[in-house]
Length: 391
Image 1 (cartoon, one colour):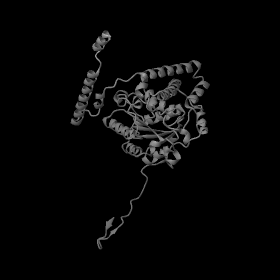
Image 2: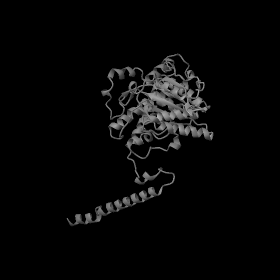
Image 3: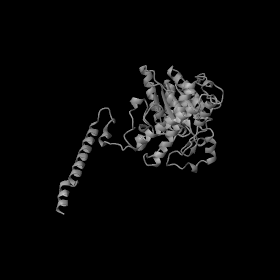
Image 4: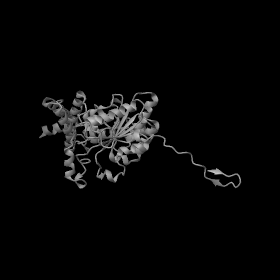
């Protein structure tokens, strides 16, 4: 607005000549989900072998974790059956120095990255903290609140870039998480700061019981990238080779300073949201069976077998490795945890606050009093022996 000299009245200033800040065309996602399997594309035998082995182990991991929930060894388990290609590819595409930011459904991604399977389930068991040290494995704690891990991933990636560290953060989120404010904030600042972070949206069809059509009117979730000024990629989430290829491109782009990428992997949650969910109330069996024909494990096994890159011995070896992993997981989860109540005060702050120290002393006194009470009430074995002699 400007002020006229004669009257002092405001009048609109002439608008500046508008021009787009960037050409949006290169940011637009693929018209159809990118695929590799079944297209005749060249495959890396070593990579395909690793992908297949991890997919087979991942499927067995989901089965075993679900069984442990039914046995009461887990409080809850959100299965990733049907989404194993996304989980495994996300883990394998990262270098050791990179960081993985998982959601609560991404325990398999953490395991595929090298985390002990029992440790990955500790949080879902209701035990100590997140169950593992994030600094040791470069895996952030499993995030139960939707999408809160995304701003954390951006912050870490931005800090790494400021320090000159060659680090990329890969953050996983479900389609339901894209409706959260944290999703908007993370993508906005990642693009503004050109942070080396990759966002992988596993679009498995439902945010618990809410289908994607009731969450967004966007053509795809990948199209949302354009509004933030980053590329969007659309990939077949059940094609392990395609997911790995797209994520590898995005990670490489981020590492060389190209900024963030939003990848939408179109997949399907074969099981219920968790063991506490009844999926039959919001989807029909015919839909689930249609997706079973696009099973990620079967797709890769069929392709590699047809190309002569996998034989019966290879299939047997992968299944044996999966059974060993399942046995180790059972042993780990069946072992009773040795819990120390005083550990509640560990890792809350780098240096304990006065209030925490007071609370710790109060608990320590209560535990000591409880021990004294138990010792006082315990029967005297010598007195009991004397009574038996008297009889």
